[in-house]
Length: 176
Image (cartoon, rainbow, N blue to C red; front, side):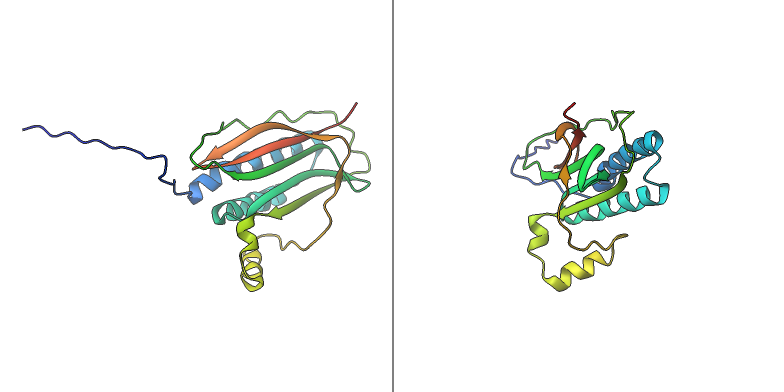
């Protein structure tokens, strides 16, 4: 007597997004930041590890909206700055690109390295107490601040995905 087994997957089934998926994508963000560090001297290793930890926690919980890391001068993001936008793939697929292609040679004179984060719609559904409790588990306790402008424009250039979610990366490019 022989037996056979069939496994089928329905598009309506949702993937379970795990900490492993979140770490996979956050590691690519950390790799991008290490390349910026190698080319421009910042951010430091401790900050990169903390940014990576923050992204893992926010991705896993579904609270990450957009996070931007880069250089800020005169209230504007300048090159090299990277913006990551989280999205649900809703049964679709996305590339899982390799990190990299940070352009060398940008003028960062007088600029300071910053990060700026916005939260997802799921975050907005939390009570103020739930938000505060979650923020206290993160390496950075972020307060409110106006979003900086951009000296140039953001150009979409990479997608990092895993477990039914994606981070779309955009880089600041100068007009010249």
